[in-house]
Image (cartoon, rainbow, N blue to C red; front, top):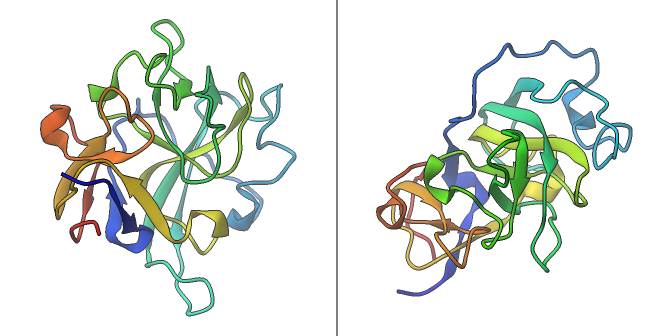
Length: 188
């Protein structure tokens, strides 16, 4: 089975994170990656804040219309490859439910189905919004457009996060026993 990619327009994430109220925000959704609250050492919002929106579509932005949910989380430890937009993260801490990682050696449970997609670069111990459910909001976060990395062959249907050595990719859930989303097509 080969590693590959899949277009962001063919992915739908399932929000398996602990539920809480969706926060009403008085700023436009295109401010999700504002430097005021994204990649900051002191949380600007309460940890776990969830915002939801509808991804719009127009030819200049790409993407597909549909709902999405983002959650305010903290990076615990990261792999030697820094977390950037489109990095797939999973739980990092057995005691702090809101810490995420892209490091397979630090990951405590890749099989939880709780994946979080970085909207932008986020440093160790810093806070920011992560995509946790729905379509990829390319209209509001241009860095999420294009292809996502896949591990082995991802076929149309359920997927999870890469097990073991590839937490930062999307993979078939048969290797994980858990699902964090669906794809509408095979990867390439």
